[in-house]
Image (cartoon, rainbow, N blue to C red; front, side):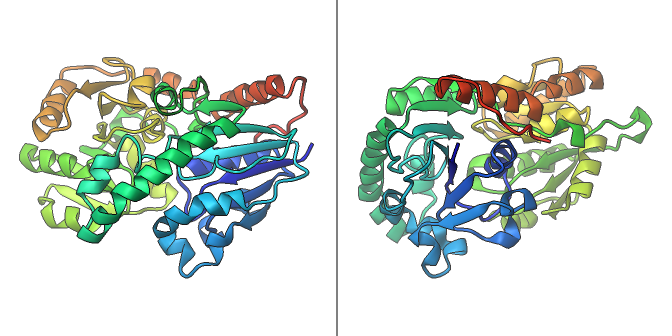
Length: 370
């Protein structure tokens, strides 16, 4: 069986690329198609595959300015020749599902989210953009929405990474979706004895506007409690400017540093609304509770009063209140570890394999993800 995997862009290793790694292990002979590709930023697991780019990849500074080429991506996808493939899997968050599969190929879309910048987060992106971008966004977004809805009919089956995303797929495309949570390498993390716990809270993730890292920094400026922030992104400089002496902004860090801080923090602070959110599960796999905004994927992973707490508004006061409530709850690290284990990589592989097998009308022999 010939398999093609369409992934929006390969310029870093985030949650979508972790899913792609599992797909690469399941389909070791699959070809990968993407808009922009930076081999140095991608794992060996993915780089072992034959990777093809659309014409976007040949445009100037494609791996840095790929988002500027968004209006051209529908055309680029539709020019791909996918003849000869039996199964096409699109990994959708940026434009990926809009390919034209050759009959009788089966097209399955694993949707991390319909494009946020034209759907659920359009207004936030619009308000934070410069004047020229704001002038261009309304007609461009209208065109992309029309194309995005039309191409949903090219998909034989949708898989959503969370109930939150399944609801968006139903709202925007009028299609039902199977929910298969993404793989989390929970075995890479482990708790430490209570005596090794430190006195800081932790925030981890890309430092961009919609994740609201500014709220966490401002809340801890007021609390006076220690906060460590790990992650890079466009807000890194701004956060360092506003951080008080009790807030340490480490920036992007290697895995060993991240693992160390997960296991020893008091709790993880998670102020953004995510489609799913792997970071809370990594913290729970390390035995630590999560203080999260009570919307989006976190509500499907964090168990209130058992593996963490929720706050209901994205405000500084709400975070402060949640941290104060956290002090009155006795969390058992074993509960967090047990909950995280339910999202193991092998669970994803089993469920995804079963879905594909059923969609293709028979059993498939898939390499097991290691």
